[in-house]
Image (cartoon, rainbow, N blue to C red; front, side):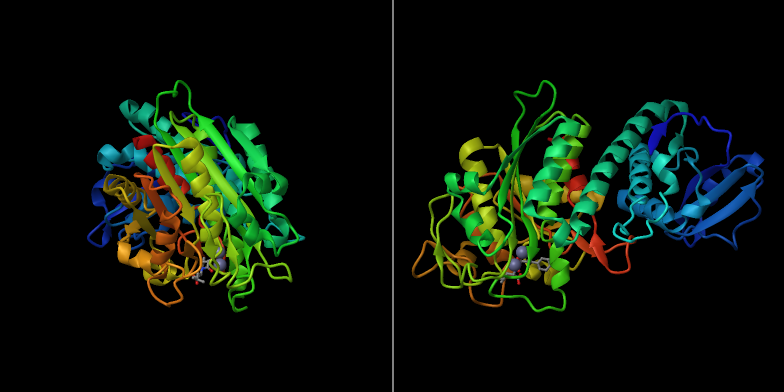
Length: 488
Ligand code: BES
Ligand code: ZN
Ligand code: ZN
């Protein structure tokens, strides 16, 4: 997909016209502002501009497609309306698509609407059917040119915004593929290869540590989680610096890269275990963010760490009651081998905190079922020691739809993680406050970083989507972090 200011082809063109809903009718002002030459019939009884509703009007070579965005539109609603259209009504689209934004009805947000629409169309090309012997046809938009028709004076801002929506969308497509990939096509080494290729293509650095290097570095917690698996763990380290950015703050990112979580010896029930191929959703969000930042040449400095491993079961697997070491030097008593994400993050967090001393440290992880029970698929659980940072992430997420909601880090929760035999244990042993006690465990390994935030994305990284009948990757995190970085 490309963005352009003019269409080159003479073929059939679909013009998408997003329309807001006022009361329970399509916005009359918007309809009145449409070109007379379109000769739209009286459509009141046919189209009420509900979110996602569409109406096709054919006129010679032109296909006019009214698209409802509903009431109280915002970035994410516009995005979803366009994404749904691309997924479910691909037949109505053409190889060149125009988006017609009538008059001033979108106010000062017109450019962000162009971004949302472009991003939605881009995401809408996604196909999950990768391993079918009869490959689905390429999406009509995969080779399309998209033109946003706006007033002359809006042209530049809208073009820039649309380009941004496309760049973010491309990185989201890539990480959705990663998260949806089954465990037998996605070893820690496959993630490393993905990072290397992306880094080469988009101009950032990726350093891969194999098991020998991880051992030499003393990442004993990462090694412990990996010791029951035939595929060795690895550690991915990414660096990106925008043009002329030497004096910009350094942002450290850490992502949980568990390529499959069986639970280990504390094995998970089988019913939903297949979803645990998505337990590298935090890693994917970090990979996608660094890639998108590089793709857009954002003026930021990033360092990212992704500890990668399987959590498997065999005679060598770590056992409940084992005491292990960690990169930080602190010892950990394993109570539950299914609380593995916090173990590998402990090593990733202390590695970045100690060696890079970033100004801000953010980690993302599909960390606990508890956060899913709390927020469902609607928000990530946010934990932070820095109220200003928490506020920034909340505000960005409420604007772009990748919501976060804060939970406390009161020290009483930390007391539940004290171990009799080691410096800390990996599970409180009590079926309560699971997302919070997990966050307290992570905090123990941040070297008291004053600007640390943890996002538990277990509910939002993988869930109900328009892409699939079952649960699938959502691409969560890239939009949130890119918008956050741009506001820095
Ligand atoms: N990967 C899971 C968390 C998870 C659950 C992600 C559901 C996505 C959907 C994590 O490693 C885990 O198993 N956590 C346990 C921790 C417990 C044993 C302390 C949990 O939340 O049950
Ligand atoms: Zn687990
Ligand atoms: Zn896990």
